[in-house]
Amino acid sequence: MTASGSSPDTRAIVLDIEGTTTPISFVSQTLFPYARRHLRQYLEQHDDDAAWAALAERFRREHRADREAGADVPPWTEGSERDSIAAYAGWLMDRDRKSPALKELQGRIWEEGYRQGELRGAVFPDVAAAFERWTRAGRALAIFSSGSVLAQQWLFRSTPDGDLTVFLRSYFDTAVGSKADAASYARIAETMRLPAGAILFVSDVVPELDAAAAAGMRTTLSIRPGNAAQPRDHGHPIVSGFDEIP
Ligand SMILES: [Mg+2]
Image 1 (cartoon, rainbow, N blue to C red):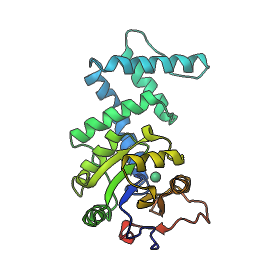
Image 2: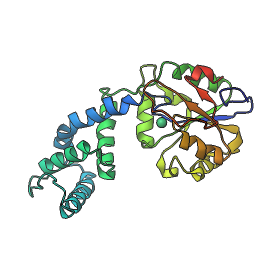
Image 3: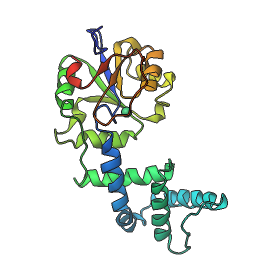
Image 4: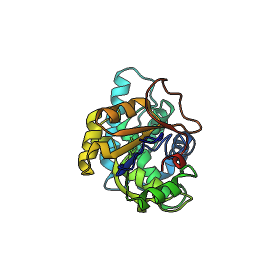
């Protein structure tokens, strides 16, 4: 094994996004503010869509539960659902609530932004060259991130270095399981039809690497500018860029 955790018999590389391929700040400084800025406009253009009613109902139910729990939610005005949802979604964003309805709404707003070319995916400068190098070496590349598969694809399709999805064979989100659960990595290896030991997983979060290692994968810790400090003595090889992974 080399210092990077890769080895000549590494047949696939599975990559985390935030803190690994992409600056952590992309989400907080680009994606979240974009969704907030375009919230009202999105609602004005889409709240007649067939798919909208089900999402609106989820917001209404979550709002009712919050109100019943005594939270100081903005009022829900019957007859002006658009205003009610805009106010409540803003309130959820302020609290960084892990609300599935909010997550779906943000995903839809981002998708439209990517589609219209207003949003572009961000990757570190060494990513495109590494994708090409690893692909040339016959390695399959995949993503495992908590963002939805759709959002992952949009991000890599629209980078300043071009469409990087041409290099990516598989995408996994939390539908496969938690990133801190070894079983998720076993499922990924199974789906990729490879022994776990032939797969290298790269992430900026030690518990995720621990889980991947428990499933038998090779691991590498990604140290990028802006990443959170990680516990010491974790035993995983460390890189500060993909240039260090041959
Ligand atoms: Mg990460």
